[in-house]
Image 1: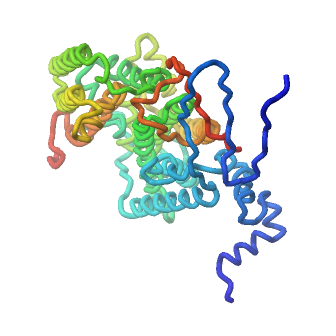
Image 2 (image 1 turned 135 degrees about the vertical axis):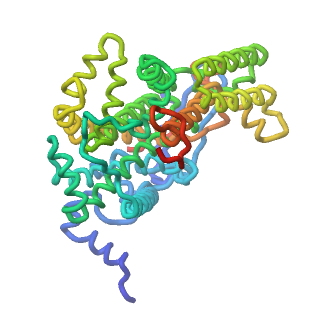
Length: 268
Length: 233
């Protein structure tokens, strides 16, 4: 019988090197498949089992997954873009021009980063509304909802700070219009505006600040909170499912009859 | 005291372990969670995630190949474009700034929205999520009528005409909901009747967010005047 690709893959998983890298080892038993999740530093954020009906497209539209996907693309393309970019005036604009006309595939790189950024903002909003309409913010998932709202704000700030970096007319005036809103804050408006821009107007200091926020501070904050966001899904008992009609579901705290909720097991 | 139960170990990995609840007082227990079929994250879910991410990659790569990111001339602080627009996701806010003073549109409104989003899961009313008009219908209808009229007049005073259709549509749907019940013959009415207050507020917010963002993006020209998307200025 000729060997299939799957056979080769199975053989690969038996090798000493593979087994030294992946602690779970090979095998198709339920135990091995659980270990593949549980014994992996990245995957162990997730539970080893999921409810079957939560995998259907209609349950989540995979919006959280897709949002994370755009984030990964943005990190990858962003790091590559950093290799060609100096956050100084007017070099930033020249670098952006070079990406367009000199760097090979530079235009593609910038396009992919830009459109992925727009997609991420859109998907984060869509994810939030989908979660809301499913009622998935209900206890014990309150705090994960709060983290999600913070991640929404971080996404907006990431996109906003990135908007300035090409240092063209579009960037300059969009940030000028946006940052002027800070001036409307009572008492502290002027101070916040100055702190944000490193000056009284959008200038070279603002570009540097936005660059640091965009490439270091905000992505780091996002990574940490995304990790907590994923981990809390497991800790809070997996993705939310409607147990009964919302109209009939009573909050246990307010109910005169004790309602025993048998929680789903917390998978490791 | 001797234990009158035995704790067993189930070795069937495909089954979820059960939790046992002991009811000490004389109460009736209602089980709200029943057993549900589960699958292994690896490979079932990871495979689907991989497919979803591949489709996303393909869609974005095609977009990036077909459409170039905009790049205008070098930033020039002495030359203000007209109109100067913020990124699209802030154009709803910029549209609001056109109607209201900056402290209201730029600080108060977004601040309240963010605060409202944070606290949603901490109110029992949002957790029980009962149909708004299932209880106390008459009084709630009066409140609805008052709020709808007040909001419409408020929007008229500040010339926010674009936000009025959405407001009236939501108010009309809520009125239909008030005259529906879980026993209504039409499934649409049953659907509306089950909707809680948070649903109505969020849907109103979603509609206005989309409308204001769309108007700011496509229908605003020099001096923030109303233009049609295909008009050149």
